[in-house]
Image (cartoon, rainbow, N blue to C red; front, top):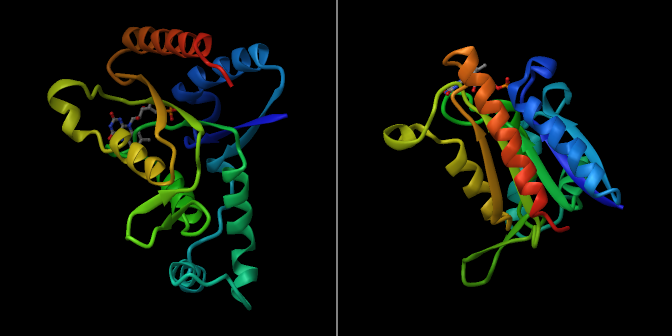
Length: 209
Ligand SMILES: Cc1cc2nc3c(=O)[nH]c(=O)nc-3n(C[C@H](O)[C@H](O)[C@H](O)COP(=O)(O)O)c2cc1C
C-alpha cells in the first residue's frame, strides 16, 4: 500500500474553505488510485510535543553528529515518531490557509519538530545541504482571504516559505493550488473554490504514482 500523508493546517473543520477543495480531491484520488491509503494528520487536533529547552537540545546533539542519547531519548520519542510518519509517506498533501501572510502556527510547530538534521537533511563535508526526503511530490492546497498576484505578491510569505523549507529537505516537486480571494464576497468565493477544485482534478489526470 502506498500512503498519502494529508497534513491539515486549519482548525476550521467543516467550515474550512481549504478542505472543501482537498476533500473531493482526495475522494477522486482514492477512486483513481485504489492501491493508496490516506493518513490524515489534523494539526488542529493533534497535541504536538512542545519544544522545551530539553527537547530542543536534541537538535544540537544531532548537529554535532551524535545520536539522541540517555534521557533525551524519552523526550524525543514522539518527535521521532512524527519524523518517521512524515519521512515514510509516499506523497504529501498539505491543506493550509494563509494566516498573517504566512502559515498557521500549528504547521510551523510541526515543521520545527520534524525538520531535524540526520533525519530530514544533512550537511555534506563541503558545507552544502543534502535534503533526505527524495523523489517525493507535494501538493499544497491553500485558500486566502485576499489575492496575492501582481503588486501584492510581495506580501505572500506562505508559498515562498513552504517551497524553501520543503525544498531544503529535498522535496522540490511542489504544486500549489490556490483559492483566492475568499473574503471578498460570497459569489467570488464560490467561483474560486470551483476553479480550484477543477485545478485539482486536472492535476489528478496528470498524476502518476
Ligand atoms: C488568524 C487568521 C489570519 C489570517 N490572515 C490572512 C492574511 O494574512 N491574508 C489573507 O489573505 N487572509 C488571511 N486570513 C483569511 C484566511 O486565509 C481565509 O479566510 C481562508 O480561506 C481560511 O481558510 P480555511 O477556511 O480553510 O480555514 C486569515 C485568517 C485567520 C483566521
